[in-house]
Length: 475
Image (cartoon, rainbow, N blue to C red; front, side):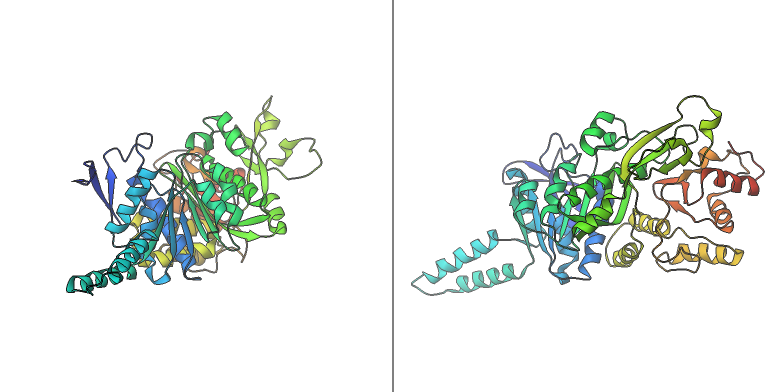
């Protein structure tokens, strides 16, 4: 970063990301002390949202897009820069006037014009020339040409308005909510006017609540209960999705989950909106509790039956309760029980990101999520070898060992280091995946945990496979 001096005699720094130049304050990395928060670690989040918007823009031009929490305006500028041919109608909002002023500066410094403000300036200059009785001079012609060049530039609307108010005032086809901390207080407004097949992206950074460190906060914000477990990252995503589903249902709308990402200190979920009470009811049916065994970490969704179950422990596939006195399981949630990835949308995103300057880390995460959504199975050694090789080269390509069409990926994952004895002779992750697929189970890596596998096998079945193909004892 380089330093520069503004016309307000305030020292600003220059940050560059994906070809966009930003002016930020000295304390830009401390959200509590600055109005123009900029975090370089959130680049993957911005790239994922950009890829999702670019994928949506392939189907429809002139999308109405909203970055509800502009901060520096980088996200709206990225959308306009990389989607010029699709002519998106980008709006950047923020509640603080000082922040909005800096956003407008950043918009102009990157070669774009601010909607209404630049139009008014050009109109005023044209009126001044029209009222000039001496006619147009060379300087007037030059000024006119400059005004024409300004009006040809892509425009970005920058508004100083509360996000809830702005979302209630007009509809947007694409909305990204990225507040500091919890985002649930903006969900009702986000789904109020979003049209059919519109997309809502929600970024949350309140990890203390969604990871169960502050149970009271989790209950207040998300109306659920979470405890620390080996699969708590996916539980956090499903907890947020449950709040998204309830907010959409209050507006008689359902959602189709397109993407769920956990990285660094943030969680990102992207959903497509489906209008109609039938969609809303179907989504609400998929908000369920999770019965979690605290001894072996086994888990299962609790059915949404109206009748009471005499013994909920029988729903768990483990036998921990039978051999241990006292209570061994707890009820978590309620959380979203449906799929957290949309395979077709992820494939399109992966192809779209090739034309964007996204980082290799983002592409690798997309590749892993595609493999998660597929979660393939195989029977023969030939299938397994072809499957593993093609998964590395072409993760978007459907293979003969993938699950049936429309069959969602299995929920949750198991940490191998927890359930497999650590030894130099322990099987590698790729070998474990091959063993599971050879036995007929679906299995894949997961981006939620680099040493875990997503599979439709139970914990007992996983341990049996590990015992069969390894001489090591299993915990």
